[in-house]
Amino acid sequence: MNKIVYISFLFFSLLFLQVFLLNNVMFLGYINPYLYVAFVIFYPLKKERFLFLFLSFLLGLSIDFFSDSGGINAFSLLFVAYIRLFFIRVIFKKTEQDYLLFNLQQEPFGKVFNYVIILIVIHHFILFSLANFSTQNFSIVLANTLYSSTFTSVLFFLGASIIRKKNK
Image 1 (cartoon, helix red, strand yellow):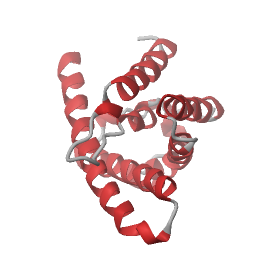
Image 2 (cartoon, helix red, strand yellow):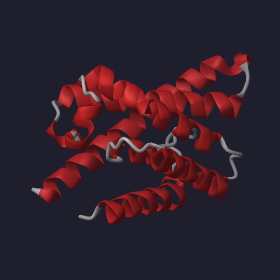
Image 3 (cartoon, helix red, strand yellow):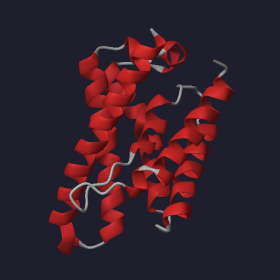
Image 4 (cartoon, one colour):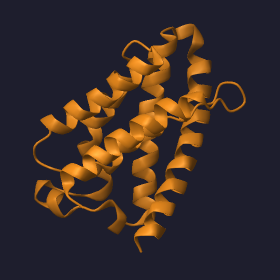
């Protein structure tokens, strides 16, 4: 698939999935999956980061627009997009020369699992910290981060396994 088509499909499908379906899911009253973070995980690695950071910001801002959340999704997704390369270097031991050949599906599951969980937890912690914006609610922030990260991770790995089985 052409990279522009792939990125456009990924962007709009995650936007519509989050806005029209997942924002309406409230498991046990306060656990909400934020699957749009998968955009950062699946976006191809390139040396040119400006477009990637811009699209990440635009996706978060679009979700903020539909959710009336004042920019917290845009900031949290942009932050995770910015630090993604650090975790690719640390977890997968990749350098700039490896970026063009990097494929998440060809990496060991344990490393992919750690990478995905770390990015999701960081995203959710920033999101809920900005949503509560108080040190008095720190236990609520941690609980929401833990539960929503778990729910998002389960949905991510289920969706990734379904997509992987379709491609085989």
